[in-house]
Length: 335
Image (cartoon, rainbow, N blue to C red; front, side, top):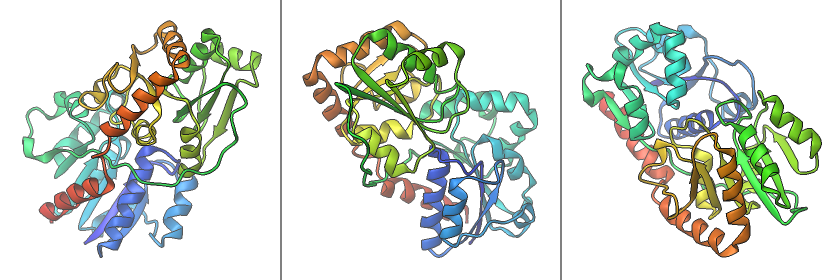
């Protein structure tokens, strides 16, 4: 099949990495795969596609494709441009954030009807879009959880403090990185905090904390996945303070490495992570409880080991093979 992947952007995010890995599998299965830059035209992931010989194409390629896979809510308008005879998959990676995108661009609602299949990562994510999908055939909607790649973590700097707390993800309002920064400061712990991800924005209160404690916080910027994994592997506590997630690939990777998880209590984790069983959870934005949870983990190495071991067991079935098998079966059914 001639498959055009519409990529939302070429930054190193979970969504772009999953699409890149899917592109390699589809190419290796014998399909003719190309990628159409949907939003951002440059970034580290572009070089990866080019290095693998996967050509970048213009929107005109949509007319020649057998299948179009539009990655993230932001590429829905390209899906709508595909001719009626071309099969389409809308591969959504956003939950509540996606709703805000659609409300700002209402024509994207039509993409749910146009798509031959819509792929979500979790049951919660599917429910988020129910206002746009309830009247459509249920068989077009699929929940296919991402698999966890078994990459070798890169070597990173050794700890300079008693504890290391790590978060992976773009520094922006959705990840609520400022909550973690303020909680680390409030906890009073001798802990270094490493934040891996491209910097977009940070509220002034958190900027002031970092300015006052420059040696306690380290921003790596956008790094390769192996480097991010190296920081995660070196962590005593992996913390993600997001207000919205669909599956949170970085959390799954931290769990596979047996890290003690501290998460916000989001619906997407239901059925995988549970407070007190394989992680600690706090309400979104509750900095005081976040600080207390950090102190709880800091006070007990045994608790960190217990939660980390339980987290590892909880994600053992999220394999790349399971993801590609189900996604490949969907493509075959559409063809």
